[in-house]
Image (cartoon, rainbow, N blue to C red; front, top):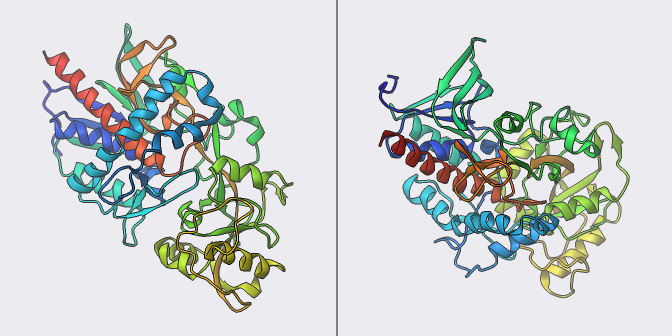
Length: 466
């Protein structure tokens, strides 16, 4: 691939998840060359594994007049809203108000199928989009953007590259230092967009520093250092670093139950009607926020200390299976779920499922407050009724904290002064989700703030030319 002309300023994007790809797409669309540095051997980051979907309201697929997306996000953010309230509300307003445009960009400009809409925990209305086919939304979106970018001569992707320093001249960021695939240290000059992800896999570093109470928890993240300190070294303010989301449902692999790395059980499984059983009993509303469901599970002593794990069964009936078939078939293939009958579940499960079916039929009110049952179709359960089941446990999943940004994705110092020449988007940032992220908003955050970062970087490059 030919290099960009020497007279052109090259924008540097660090991280090839959805935030980085969204930023790069905006830059390339406006003829700014991009060098994308990815520390992994393959591009896509955690975005490529996202399986529940991307939030958006209102959209062509979401016919409900949804005026609650902003308030649902505020509620989910919890206690963090008590400080920096105006700043947080500005970020959340940008996130939710831009969601329609984000979905339209992916559907209309990029040709991605997002025609199926589901509800997830903490949401008032269904607004989480994914495709109707077998391909998980994270993979569908990231692979499509990556394919499009690779078709441009202005785009260059380098994998197995670890950024070690952000370069500055005075108060302006001028590039990065990185170690390449061959082990050599190199400099790359240009304005920088950081989209390098969170620190959920940094168990011995940032996670241990800010959340030592989570020591011993399994995680859905590969073990690697967080990059927030690189940005703090050039003056970036860190915010919400103590707010780490523990997802209530990570699969316990029966072939390797003590592995600290878990595969996420997508929230859509509960959103589309699935239930959680502990010793054959439901114990909470499955559609509450991730934080609340996690707290309900961890209120009891763990069943295993290393890693710290609880034995909870995720149960789906045939109707939920049909609605989430692309997910469940994959989980069954991986050995994380299996098709059984209710008689194979713990004692008492039949009675518990029978009660749940009465809630679904509207004959009784769920004492846990669940009112939406989506695709649950089982009416009169028997011991021979078919269900799909897997064991799940809370897992460290997402870090809400990171570098502070404004609604233009500019990285901020203390006092909210911007760091010139530096933007950030995605999980490397903090402030957007507060103390708890709504399911489906991680991909949305990546698209919204990734595109904003790309657009702002374009204006910066053009300003330098002028």
